[in-house]
Image (cartoon, rainbow over all chains, first blue to last red; front, side, top):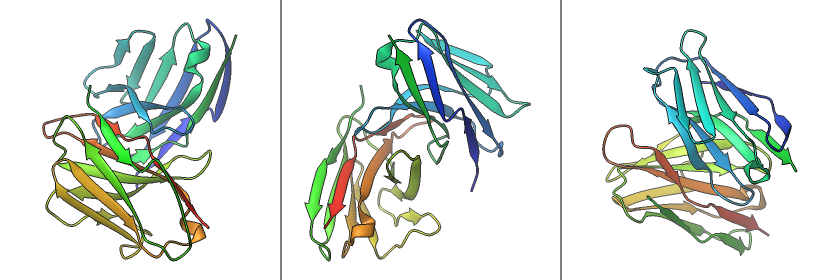
Length: 107
Length: 116
């Protein structure tokens, strides 16, 4: 089974700061790299996704960067807000999920 | 936007009971639905992939006879946990993907299953 390695496991950021979560993968067969946001007791929600033909995609405060040669993609949350406090998962398509990053944004 | 409805959201039942969980795509047709299991503070583990009109494909280590999946239509897939035992207690989540191209996954809100 393809593996994704997500880091860090947990992250504490002050309000207004930048949150950065990284994901590394092994298999290049996939061509859809999403990030999901999950709040306690809820299912994951697609936050942003990228195809490997672009290196960066921005949607509002959320940016996903993709480095095909390094087999890595990352999520940047600009101007982090307390409401962004959640668990974030990277995935290969929707089949293999990273272990998750618990983000806490402090006021 | 696209919505996936999962029902029930929470179920408590006695050991030995069979429990059915429904996953419906409300405003799009889903050729493929996925079923996941999630333990507290852990990641999602794919259990099986369900394609409309065909048998589900189970991931290694998932008991087919324990977790029965039916994808009878383009908007409905069901997961039945047969003869449930306390170790089957978990958070079960479904997701659905639309018909064309690189459609994003849409997830249900999960079902909290507690077996006493």
